[in-house]
Structures are given as structure tokens and as C-alpha cells.
Image 1 (cartoon, rainbow, N blue to C red):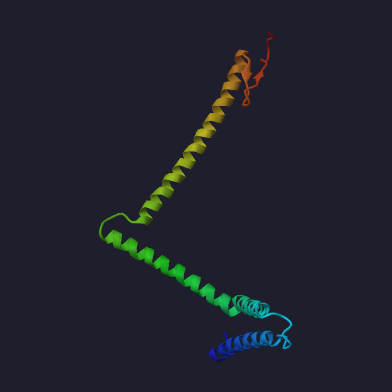
Image 2: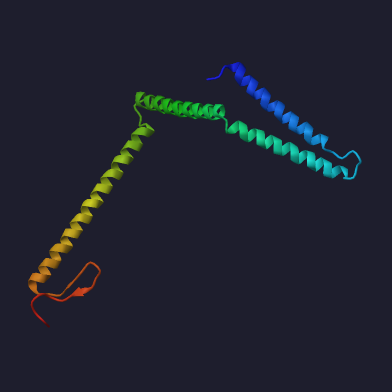
Length: 157
């Protein structure tokens, strides 16, 4: 990590570079006055905005800025986690239901539903197989899973 003085020096250098570019854009005016004043104002404005945009992009892509944003996001997530834990404890202390309790219950019911539906699908598949086998044993034409009628095994109609 750089010292605070080095960080201040980097910021000072960035602003000095910005001011230099801005001043050089203003110095490119034609002293003869061939161009009208509004065009010069547009050029100065465009140069100012371009320089400001470039400086902001360089700053936002710098390692120091990205590290600061990461620490800020980590701090916000940690604060939210602590606040949720505090509120959960407060609800429990007041003998009421906390949001985390409801979320856990909801998650458990969803898991139970998923498992139940999987079991029902397996049972339906097994029943279809048993039905096909019984139809084949009885000599009846049967329908496959697509609804197509299959001819019976031994007898011809």
C-alpha cells in the first residue's frame, strides 16, 4: 500500500495533467478570428469534456479505486449481515417470528415439494412400464409414452 503522501501526489499529478490539457485546448484558438466564437466555445467544451472523461476513466480503472470499491462493498455486505443477525435476535427476544425463520421454512417446503414431485414422476414412470408389461401379457394392443398404439406380441387381429 502506498503512503498517503504518494496517493496525494498521484491525485495532484492527475489534476495537473487535466489542467494542462484544458489550458492547451484553449490555446489552440485562431488569433486571426477566422472561426466564429461559438465554434471556439464548442471546441473548448468538447476538449474539456474529453479530458475530464479520460481522467475519470483512468481514475476509475486504477488499482487504488478498485481496491477501495472492493473494501466498500465488503463493508456494506458485512454491515447488512450484522444488521440481519441483530434484527433476527431482536425478533427472537420478543418471541416473534424473524424473516430468516420464514425464509428457512420456505426453503424447506420448496425442497420437500421438489422431492415429492420427483418421487411421483418415478412412480408414474414405473406404473407406465407395469401397464405396458400387463398389456403385453394379456395380448392387448398398448400405447407407448407417445400415445402410439403398439401391436400385441402373440396374436394377430
